[in-house]
Length: 439
Image (cartoon, rainbow, N blue to C red; front, side):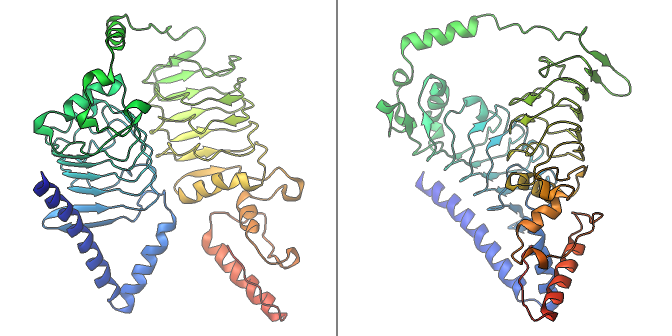
């Protein structure tokens, strides 16, 4: 066991040394090479944009992707499919969704340590039948189903320690699997945090009766044989379903106060416009995985929960026109990986610090087209573009020295913004005053 552990640790160390050597040689190139390196480094500002500059290299005939410490919250869709090793340590990934790694069928090792992972869906590792090494230590995982691991038949090394394990009945199948002699390198050193009487005990040393009493086990068996809850069918008289040109559910002008439940999972377009939906609750659309167009205009929406759009990974167009939104809470847009169009007109956007999340999300997702992001409150910023407000927020020079921005100024035109800053500084210098402008 110690020999296998040492070999695998040396394996990752070699990969890290190779990367350092590679980066060092790049710094010794000619001036043109250094210029290219600078341009590449500057592009890392777009942390969440497609094409995030992670390091991809080959070592001993295996292809590596090194995306450590990139503040990632999800796996990007455009990474090469022939990767053998994926290094995603020290990011901000919170949830592993079903099929998230399914296209990386050649993957042999996956490093996810030191993230914020708290939930792993049952089929998260689907397709990884060649994976031998999985690192999940230093996360926030409390419970893990044995089913999660069945898609990795060759898994021989698994790290689970420094997670807040809740050693309850739900963990019995996993604990039993870890204790099989053939799995001697799976889950070593992982310890219970809850309940208090099991705190500090290793998962591999627990007994089944410590996890489940006979009463609890009998209760679980009764739940298993009980008839599943039958959810009411979707009320087709309330809304209309159209098949052409795409599978559409038309619920506009139905006096709805909430998003209807049990929406058919194959709906591609959902129209909820002109209703009375004042707020969006967590996971309102979680089961509509095929949804690409969502119209929520003219509802008077005041608040959107950060998890409201959870599960809408295929959404391409979102219409929030004519609501009562003043800002977005941090995280509202994080699941919308493939969003292309965002309608924001006719909302009373309030230009204070809370609007910064929305502006910077759009800035980093430069492929998303949007309109209507204009300050309505407070009165001193009324009519300003939100981009102009955010930039002025960081200005240090007095207001009478600020450059004048025409109303037609495009907030996404970074080159124009830099040119105007430089011009402003030069103008101020002519008057004998040196001012530092910070963008």
